[in-house]
Image 1 (cartoon, helix red, strand yellow):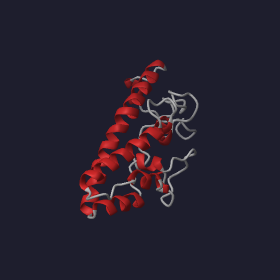
Image 2: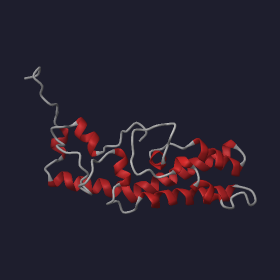
Image 3: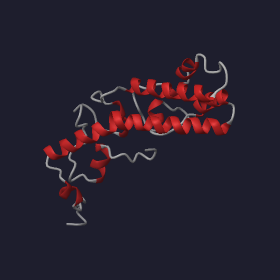
Length: 180
């Protein structure tokens, strides 16, 4: 996901312009379906705020299990205050100096988030283990609640507009004056 490799309609239209004539989201019909839009589309079963709350819940639960004492008291508030976990209303190209929650969905773990978890669990090994398990569970949550349904709806849309497997497999290069 980090290299903008998800097959969004924007990507598919760019790669196969003779097959995909539009990159407008087939779910909301309002915006281009970019990698970010896949996760923020208003037609998703769950919204991005629910996703963020799920991530917080996973982090708090997993960290509480392995940490000592009261170190996780008010932990969710600490997470809420991490600037790199904010939900932005406009998404631009990736800026590694200013991450947002959408970057976390795409697989980035902000240093500040790791540091906060590390403070609770003491060792880097345990912090790495916590974050690995949390991110695996979070990716599964995203897959189950956004990605699966999105893929089904896009496949249905493709069938409705006549984009079948045979058409996808054709060599689809645009002709230029050099190739005519």
